[in-house]
Picture 1 (spheres, rainbow, N blue to C red):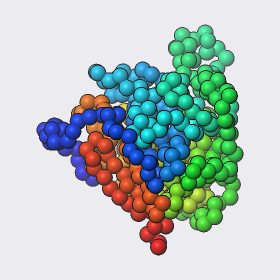
Picture 2: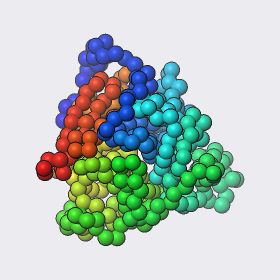
Picture 3: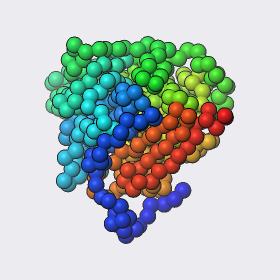
Length: 381
């Protein structure tokens, strides 16, 4: 694995590349391709999809204003005023999106659902998608505990109430496992919802998974809402994209053991920001060509996860949103890292452009580095 370059080399690179936030770029014209912006919301999660028909899907909204997983916990870098909502709005502008057609909330944890109100103050959303009611409740004595009182405003229960208020008067979908939603030419199959998971393999899937042998259940899940998270298999043309939200390790085992019910995919959103609460060894059966990790400087990218993903048998590109401060030796080549630790916070995303024929182009806007991959179906023809 390539090691991190010297600060002198980084500064030289900065002088050669126009140093501007992605928010300053001009909107792209309408494309025949599926365009995706994996947005840097500092260890939260948010990804914007725009179909060739101009339909938009936003998955998760990051943190509330003033919160994030910066190098100093919940303290923005000097000069940084970009909230999660600001960063999403900037990505939307770049992609020519003025309103969100579908706003999908995988679950109600603060790093996913916290940015809803601030975002809706900037742009409207038409249809809201969720797994159903909040599953995570505070203990009965929470109001009497000073530390818990501070947390209550950002609890899943509180954020769920705000979410329900937001979708009043709008379209609202609570998908069941197996349900299909078509957004333009993007097809979404729900493989996890409200703690329910696929019970039968999808067509073409069902191969035995030898990697399940000896893998134990995990006692930790990071909160019950993770277990209830939505999970989606998305298909566009010849490309398969898997996004499991924050589904837990044990949910992964139900999808993958003893047989892989989903099959192989081309693009994989590494589950739970790359925290060791997910990304069990059997996930290698997904066998992605491209992996995307929505980590923060000090959140996600845990050592066992980084090593598991790197060992995926046919992985061609491992792209991460942030240089890992905690595990510097595990960072990939800097070209595959959107935001470097030594540089000012510029909120760079990772951008994807996927053609109907199965060409997957991934771009790092920080330096313009780009790689193109072919999906499995594209290569088989």
